[in-house]
Image 1 (cartoon, rainbow, N blue to C red):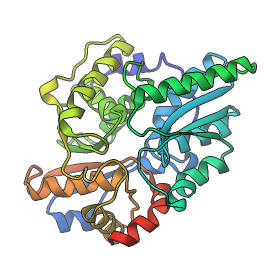
Image 2 (cartoon, helix red, strand yellow; image 1 turned 60 degrees about the vertical axis):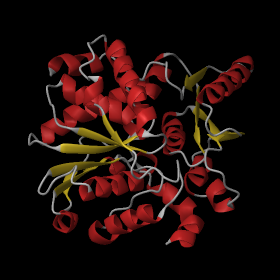
Image 3 (cartoon, rainbow, N blue to C red; image 1 turned 135 degrees about the horizontal axis):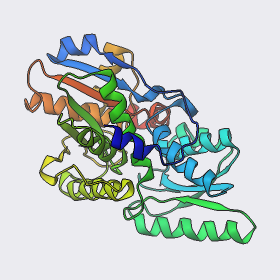
Length: 339
């Protein structure tokens, strides 16, 4: 255990959010309703900029940016990106300007979607934002970010890029290697972990951390952006990259990766009746808010796995609540058309 912890300690981190650990609390009413022993790992209450899992990830990126003398941070993501909202808050806290590139991943002319929720908070935190018209072009989005950084550099700034696509050192994933160690300090019982699987930073970091620490608990990733077939090799590559970054052997084997896309339809950031029902169930039985892009789909996926008995009766399950609540307010008009 010390080997992983010692290696993580060699990477600079910015002081963001509340001190760990985040709460691990039992969802009593949902446990009774679903016939399982359900726990919530409350990474929605990490504190900075209305919380979420991105605080753990950005601590490493901003730590690296500060160590390299940067005064501007650039990041790309979806219009209602939690990552960008949290980056904007981190920049405000640390005194670095933040430049956000909003990708049009969800086709929408709804003004509430395009200006409310996380976008409103981006502006509140003082970030500068630009639009990127393509929604599924990671390489192109990263190239546009590099061009923007070159503009800033020509103006005398010292930019730092947080890239989107694979093939870059996954600094943010180290935050979830640390989260794995944190969880094992809180609980030692055999557990099925259920977590969002998108970029692979949280899912991959959690898997790598647990396995590196000798824990073989199942980790079930719920696809939020691409199909299970597309996600498996991406996640394995992410774990391999984490190993290279830490100079450690990758403890995750490809046949250990379990991802499910039951709740992905009709696509990234788009709503469905099962998604609405999952968000309502969590709200009405536990008073906990989920979002339509990540945590709502993850909980809908958990419910689907329970119906299929992939999660059996009485199983101890931890739902990693990665936050995203502010995005819910951008989806009100979509919600009213479905609910």
